[in-house]
Length: 153
Image (tube, rainbow, N blue to C red):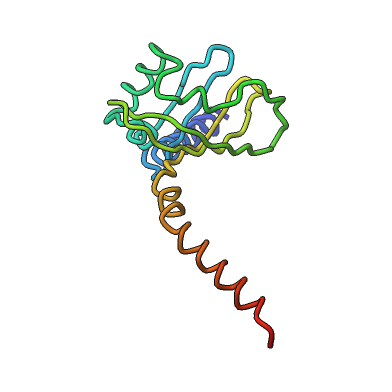
């Protein structure tokens, strides 16, 4: 019985190590936020880099000192009634360390009965800029299409 418990504990530890490696090395920003006090309890390096930090612990510490800082919390609606297994997405403006503004997108799930938010964060600034650069060409193409469709055959 004791050997089985030891083997089970080894499996649990390996699973936790795999999870931690995936979390820490993900190419997207991952975070966990405690809703009762707005504390960012976990964040990976990519989340920190999105906001201009080189260290995830420093990023979490900075948000603990200034909860409204960087536009992180202001982009997360706090009054949502959590629905189990539902993912919420929203986007907004934030700013990096040093003040540079950017656009951010969050995808989150409320966990542990709504006590925490587990989420993914992504910098979408370049995507939005690309759309803006294409807007004149899209408008012109639509205009040309409307003219072509209006001509009698």
